[in-house]
Amino acid sequence: MSDAAQAVAAVNKASLEAGLSIAQIAVDATEKLTRLQVEAGKALFEEGVAQARNAAAAKAPTDLFQIRDPLSTVGLDKWVSFSKHVFGIAHSAQVEASQVVEKHVVSVQKDVIGAVEKVLAQSSMPGTDQAVTALKTAITQATAVSDAVKVLLKQSTDFAEAGMKVASQQTEAVKAASKRAH
Image 1 (cartoon, one colour):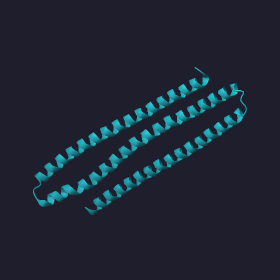
Image 2: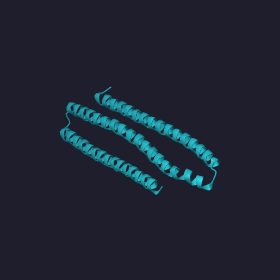
Image 3: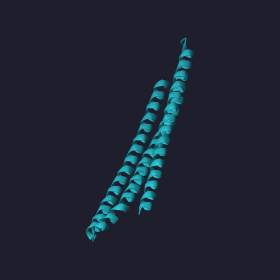
Image 4: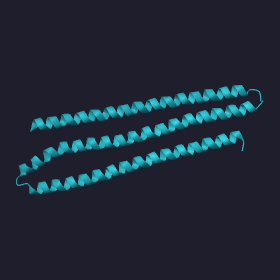
């Protein structure tokens, strides 16, 4: 097998391994999300049963109001907590996948440039220096685009984290207002 064919085979194998790593990250994240959903569903069911028993035990209509008021803030807390867990799982998976992709891209770039330089160095065709320079420029530009995408992903993650923080603060404000009202 020629050097170029070996380099292509190595890049293909590395790409397959990177793809499998990302697939495993996705499977792990899906498993975590599914477990979270099942646990949340189970807890919701158990709370519904407890609420139904409390409502059935109420002696007067005013007792029902006393049961209902705390439930609204508890439900809001649970929703925010659940959302934070979902965001945490998604964020963790995104970070892991980004690291795999970044590592793979750097490796492929290095391997491709090395293979092309080696093949073209062995070739005595005129213009090979310009071809190598053009390839390096294209890879440098692709790296710049990749870096820009990473910055955008980080900004979107920061935006989502800020949104979760605001939601938490608003939940606390609603709880405080609810406590003052009683």
